[in-house]
Image 1 (cartoon, rainbow, N blue to C red):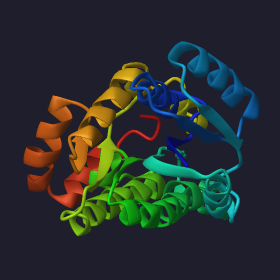
Image 2: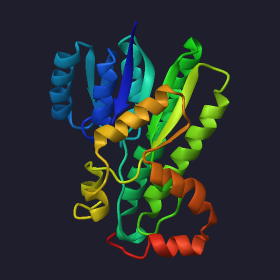
Image 3: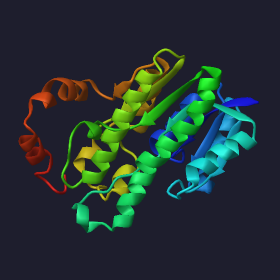
Image 4: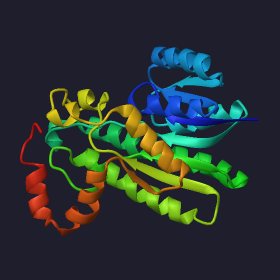
Length: 257
């Protein structure tokens, strides 16, 4: 049996950087995403640079049985996933009813359902070995509501709550669960959400530094990693005192951000 870290959404952005960071520690990795060609390019690059085993499993995680298929694949290969990076996800920007219900359910599937299923399957193996770490890519969006991002912010609120609760359940084991909560990051997220021209994202953090903060926080066993000092101050010491009505008005005042 070999050990490996599994990264979903590994073809770009934070997931790609997490894959490189983990491999740089001498760890084997499993790259999971929809775009096989990009995964194979990354596989070649990482295996040559770090001399670790890099396995590609191309799958559309929006499919209903995707998480189970990923788990069954790793079991069939005799792999113990000791690091699980639940990174896959996307968002949409606009009025809730301006998108088909199928798009909203796809977001719930990818941002929540796949994350929960993979955590469930791999946590069972981790508990048998009393060893393992889970890093869930969430967002500071999970700490507040947002008109025009209603479903996306709600999915991240779920991830934040789920991660912290699971972390507490496992406090007497050698297994940790961490939620990485960045603000805007320069990744494909902005393009998918239709915000390519948004100043918020053009001035956002880079994917590597964000991934590194999350990775280091995971290694220290932190429950929540907020990607910047000022976001930490805002979320912990300012938001609790802002009335919800005022917060909604502020966050939703500009539909185009």
